[in-house]
Length: 470
Image 1 (cartoon, rainbow, N blue to C red):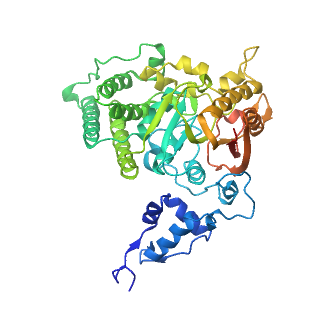
Image 2 (cartoon, one colour; image 1 turned 45 degrees about the vertical axis):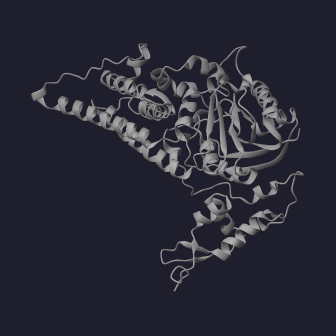
Image 3 (cartoon, rainbow, N blue to C red; image 1 turned 180 degrees about the vertical axis):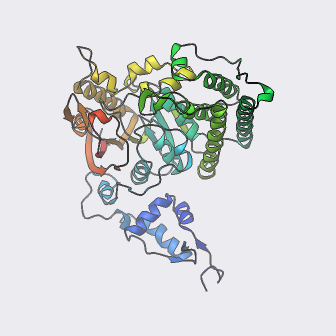
């Protein structure tokens, strides 16, 4: 007879985590490291903690000399946080699932896995603090911060990145969910109607025409079939007509997520044309299916994240030292020099959404096009170094004193030369009074696609933890 049959209250792993204010993954990590004993399991194999076990875990987690803070190395800095604990974590996360909750709403090349910011946020901040990602990209850090009961701030010059980050971190009401469900149904009906009339001779073979506006640039007809343009124009107008920012952001993000798949662009990471098997009606049906998946992800996100925790996403150029408020922790992955051109691979999305792609092209840090350019105006490693000096100078004023800035970065190859970006970031950080307190190497999965195969595939990256001494 187990504890539950005797009438004693037991707690699941998730409930224990919630009771003491940490993430479920933290409890599992403590179990793997032997910092807390394994509880009994039921016939399903699920753990059940007794009230006494919960009390012991709570006490241990709050004591000054907690077993969770012990490590054979001494703390590297004189703070209440023992940085050396980070070295006990297996940062490879070889078998980790990376598309849970809203992480899988929109494709985004070269993003880091959510387990990295999750672990750093748990170790280097507390519940209720503000976590920032100053190169927020697809919003991975922002989502993890809110899951872990922190407020979040995102900064990025890429308007596509900011759109999806807002969509992935916004709570929606039941009324807003209903609006989006109606939109999905509307798109399904359109797709089925187009496909039916295209194949049934009784209704003729007149192609679907939309009266909705669409981009007039030559790029549209170059990258999209004519019938795809008509469906995208109709759906986009429906998205813009939604009544709230939350519904519009999610619908537009979903629209963006299918744009490349229904275009002639080979993939998110290959800017070449190829013929695809897209038929009339497919675009509307793909949008409907993607929107239903997005709605499900957001509903799951809303069930976990408490309403009081918010996220502010700022579509600004970090080199302009924007005023976005103060924060307690930074977890980010800066663009590597010469590795990627986000303005290029998001071009068709920006074209449809009316975003200023040319401006972002000028503001983008690390762009492969800038570093492959020839002549006096080409970007160099010193360009990246000076940009990072500007970033850390701004961070010294916006990150609270005594707090940490975590940068995840790999090496680059520029004009055939291997560039150690860790050294560049460390030099830039020290120029603004930051101290490097940890440098942890992690292996990148072999299955992860290279940023740019022509300049090499990155096999490892470093997690750098800087301390704002000033």
